Length: 428
Image (cartoon, rainbow, N blue to C red; front, side, top):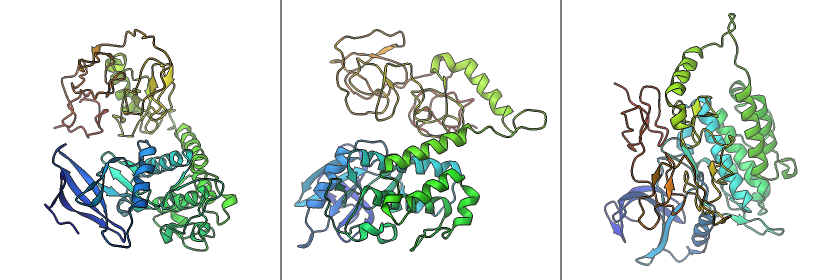
């Protein structure tokens, strides 16, 4: 067991986060890169091998997704196998214990399903879906972690009944995990998230917490949970991709529902907000290209925004029609055919479609990398030609205010959150 202030390689231990039968997880400080990280270190005894930890690293490295926890580094230090990962703020298990708005819960559910759907798309069965394995980061960003038990989905799959008993599917407990097993576990996680109760065997509806669930959640979402938590795997969703698609469809339908109108024909409680949005659009639409609507609050947002400046929702324009000829498969923002990388999310490189370089009137700056010097559009986070992070903060003409956290320009008089890093905007 490592102690606080003890050094292992370039890392200085700050404290222990969790202990398990196979490994310990520590909060640590990288003395070279000057950042805090999480270190996962297997226990040193004759019964603990490193094979499944090597497997975890390889699986996590393969799954590049904003809602899957990234492995920063893995190496042997002083005869210890050390996995360095992103350091979150808390687990979903901790967050569930506190009150949250339904909008926040729906956002967490969407992110969790997106992560699992991406794993299933890459033929990976997680085998240990539970709230403790979802890590929350700043801005309510959720990431799926701990692929130590993950299996590759093939026609014949032999595996142990590894997993956490409270969330394990019946067939997985018998040593036959399937993609539907992850769906079952995810259904239980979301049921607990929305109702505050964890169902137990024999999982017959109505289950514990059903009254709370029906009072808070739309019927379409309840049907999705009911299909996920079926004892018979054949009656569940075949993969999390199918479940995520139904969730997105139900969520989109709910947002499109017309809001109740007052007797005079005006929508209740929205006139002041509509006036604020109109004034904002009058001043900043042309410069910020806020032609889209937030998927959560329907406020005006731009494709380049990382968060909604009105409600803080992550990637608020995701899925919107883009003016670009292609889109990034990771964040779904528009990209040009002559870009080598996504300029918005640090996604993986693209297959080069053309050697031709297209001019664009939206290019207003140049990459600071002397070996690149490629053209940049406002509010890009990374150079689409060399992938270097943009260091010089972007400013908004007509506003002298900047975000206290990232130093990028903000419309201080209008926004509640920084659209670039989701830091709350503080007004005196």
